[in-house]
Amino acid sequence: MKDRELMGTAKISSLLLKFALPATVGMLVNAIYNIVDRIFIGNADYLGSNGLAGVTIAFPIMMVIMAVALMCGVGGSTLFSINLGERKYDRVKRIIGNSFSLAILTTLTCAILIFIFIEPILINFGASETVLPYAKDYLQIILIGAIFQGINMTGNNLIRADGSPKIAMLSILLGAGVNIALDPIFIYILQWGMTGAALATIIGQFCSTIWVLNYFIRGKANFKLSLKDMIIIPSLGLKILTTGLPSFFIQVAGSVLNVVLNASLLAYGGDLAISAMGIVNSVQTLLLMPIIGLNQGALPIIGFNFGANNLSRVKETAKFATFSATVIAVIGFIIIRLFSAQIIMAFNQDPELVALGSKMLLAWFLCLPVIGIGMVLSNFFQAIGKVIPAIFLSLSRQIIILIPLILILSKNYGLDGLIYAAPISDVLSTTLTLIVFTITIKKLSKKAILTE
Image: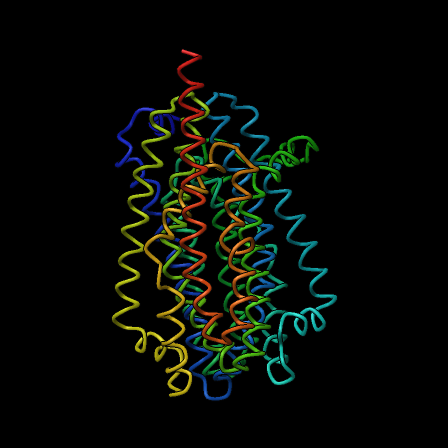
């Protein structure tokens, strides 16, 4: 428990580095092995651009399962940190058990429902007659391993909240390593195609699941997982899910956005445009994962100090995390400007795809430097348990602003309008987040002065 108490006393920059660096490495590796899937698929002669399009169509459906898992994991870890700051240790144990039970129950239910209606769902998500078999082969295997994803995402968030960010990172590294090792064997040597790519993914997730459960049952966890704590308490379960709603909505928003994107891309650019956007999505995942990792590192620090009523450390953490996220975004922006064509060519050598993909990359990430600010500050509201503003700000970029812009601009300017909708949305949503954050901090500071 001693290391855990350092959240209230240690230097913020050192503390954030300790928690965010392993989370960032883990998220980057997680992004890389998902991208490696697409690289192997895109460069397999018998899969190619159709395989890439299939993964692109399946991805928003996979994001729904990720959303459910994150709702349980982030909701549980946020309450974990706040209650730990308040020294309510018995409640922390119940939060861990209930979070795992909810993750298993919700991801399993979600996967079964999607499996039953897999073809109509894929068609409605934009799969053409050509791409449908590729998307179905990939997704139906991913669904079989959905429960592993639920346990992993929940467990890794709780491990970080328990003060062991390196162990959470190693869990992700294990799954990624297994996936990357199996991909070329299943796709190139055994020629299992989309099924092989998906199998490599879920086998990797299974290995991570064993690691996570071992930590909480037999490992160095400060709070062990027990069967009695896994019995769902309705009020606590509801609190976990409610607290995790912002993360759920972020992922679902991404899924809805991808559906709208795929439909618009099919209308204005065909399957080639969908393949190109699949690469853009992969690059976006790679660029944003370090910021998401930074958020995951900041979340327990902010939550603990908010629970301990230490507002100065809460504000300092938010400030340092925002600065760090901006630096990461600027580096990503420079890389995109310099190497857009080379990035596309890593996925596929088709000249038409390279030309279109490069153009889409440059436009989509035109205002990338401001994204980090909005992501960190919207995460701040979730870390302190302010669910409503967290949900509103999380939805602002992808749903409230971006989707209407895509529909309006694509109708008037075709594919060009679609791809330039993203940078406009980035600027508007970040401005909105800054305004809400400034107002909230002033209110919290005033409240802190009155209670002194």
